[in-house]
Amino acid sequence: FGPDGDRWGAIRKTNAAWAPAVVRGFKLYQDPRNTYPFAMHTGDADDILRGTLLTWANAEDFEHARKLIDRIEGFDESDPQGGLYMRATVDVMADTSATPACDKPFEPRQAFLYHQKPTEEELASCR
Image (cartoon, rainbow, N blue to C red; front, side, top):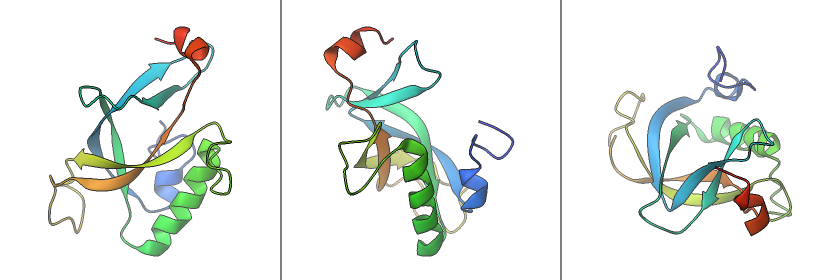
């Protein structure tokens, strides 16, 4: 993270609002060979991933953001399994009470989540 909220300036460049959020069925891992963590789908409702929900006031800003974030995460819609990250649509619970124009701050909503699917061998080196 940086002064603009993220290293790439995506929040600032796309006029995003953000809020703390949780997703069930995903877990965060760290491969010591990399400088960044990654989420992995476990399917276990007891696994809770804590993160950040980004929202946009209009479809134009969202579409600009989606394209930018897809590039950052190495996700290609034409080859969704071929990049570093996959993108899933997930149910998110977020505290968006401070987000402008949000009339239902604690209701579940759908969001994109970028995640990896490491091999068992790769996962064995993670913490």
